Image (tube, rainbow, N blue to C red; front, side, top):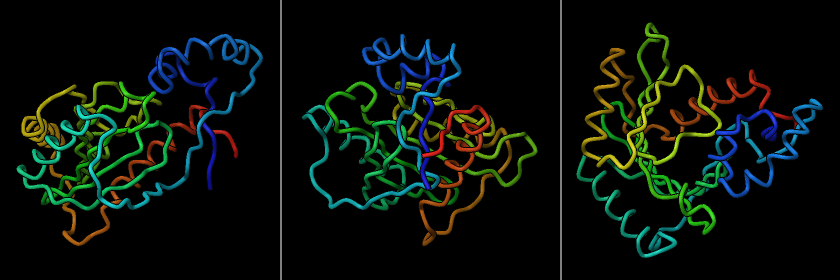
Length: 221
């Protein structure tokens, strides 16, 4: 099942981060009228479940600079003990749709994300995500997400996700920082070595859908 994002329900900052400054400027007049009239403006498709599509390995990167950045981040992850789980095309709200999945024992999932679409060169610059689900939610949080992405997420993530952004932070330092964020809440859930790598990300996606639904961001397809 799929729905669409209601662009009229986004904040101006979220809209700019999602579609870029130039396109946001062109959309804002219509969105302003839509908000006054209580009218929805359909945006990108939002799937109820993630649908990662396996890709054959090749030399990744839309530019030589992006290729070098991807190679360096991939090597840093391997040097940190990450086990690669493959490269995928992951349709989603944003245009950052290339993903290489990793497992770090025993409780950390990692993803290397980027876009090879020319118009998303800024937002699609390679970045790393570390995700850990907590054993309990006594702190009010369900999981911890730490990233060195240069831009905040759009739409805003569920309030039960303890999100930390450290733009351009080197992978080894980012992992240390992530583990420190997790320790503030207690212990993380261990991930089976041979388990489905998508499950922690699917669960986080479900959290975000519930938050976006409460905000009126999702429209029936």
